[in-house]
Structures are given as C-alpha cells and as structure tokens.
Length: 232
Image 1 (cartoon, rainbow, N blue to C red):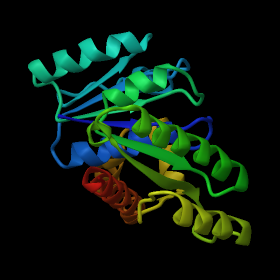
Image 2: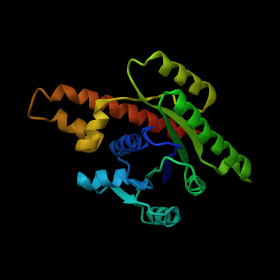
Image 3: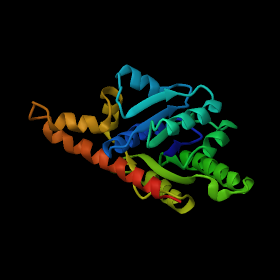
Image 4: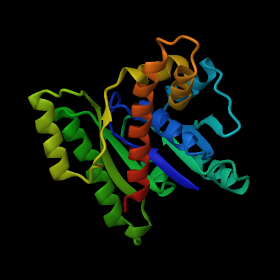
C-alpha cells in the first residue's frame, strides 16, 4: 500500500484538483483507493458527498486530527482497503506536517508557475530538507517531487521563467498538471475517468468527440502518478 500526500504551504495551488485526478488515474488502473481529507475545509469530502461518489474501490474519509492517521492507515492495510492512499492537506505549515510526512511514501508539492509560488515552494522544499537532516534515517523519509499546476497551454513569459527556475531549484516531475476545463467538470460531475467513459458512450453524437479531451487529462494524471511512484 502506497501513501501519496499533497503538501504545500499555501492554498490555491491545486492540491485538491490534483488529488482528484490522481485518484481517477489510479482507479482507471484498477487500483483500490483510499482518499483522506486532512484539510479543515473538507473539499474532497464535500465533493464526494455532494455527488454521492460511492464505489467499491474508493473510500473518501475526513481526518479531524493527524493523530488519527496511524490508526486509519493500519486498518486500511490490515483490511486490504486500498492499494493507494491519497492525502490532501491544508495549505499552511505546522507540526502536523511532520506526522503526515512520516506516514507517507511520496510527497507531491503542487506549484503554480508564479514568483510567489516559487518562493513558497522553496519554503516547503526547505522544510523537507531540514526534516532529512533531523532524522537518523533520511532514506526512510518519502520522496519529494514538485509538479507544476494550472499551467496554461500557452504560458506567459513570466510563467515560463518561473517554471524554468523551478526546474533548476527543485526535484520536479517532467509531466505538468495543465489548466484544463475538464478538471472543473470533475468538480461538478464526478471522477475524471468516468466522465471520459460517459462521453464516449453518449447517445448524443456531438458529445463523443469531447471524450478525447478527458482521455488526454486522464493520461496526464496517469503519467504524473507513474513519475511520482518512480521518484526516489
């Protein structure tokens, strides 16, 4: 069972959207998933409840205190509830982060390509580096990867420059999480891979060509997931 945590010291960088896409990627690969929402806003839990997303291979649970995490993960492992666990976190620093990091196999830090996010991502990366210095077994800590999020298909010069600096300063994934309208549809309609299937089998012939856009978004998420799991 692999635990993948989205960690960043600010909100609005795309953690929740990324977790939803990665969950769809894992589900489409026939993995069982457990999604843990440790953000006080409970965006993922609200989304799953609003859309009544209940699947045999997907469980979405809130975490009110990080101390609950150990017990939840132990139970998930013992009951074979999941192959992959995704954890969404709040956009701020705090002692809770140490606890979550210790329980994770991979950390993914979403970064919007702006100078402000570049600085805040540096704070998150420096926190991770300090954690490696403090521990007696740094190899026991999770991998850390930055992924560029909300990147438009035609980026501005400032976005290109921020992205270039990110590649120079951080361990960053090759694949980017592009700004796509399909992720807005996920918030309104449900899981990404199911939206693709729904459009492919639509009785409306005008809807079927749109399936390709959802498949492209899904493949992007699959690639990000593969690169995360391969990170060391």
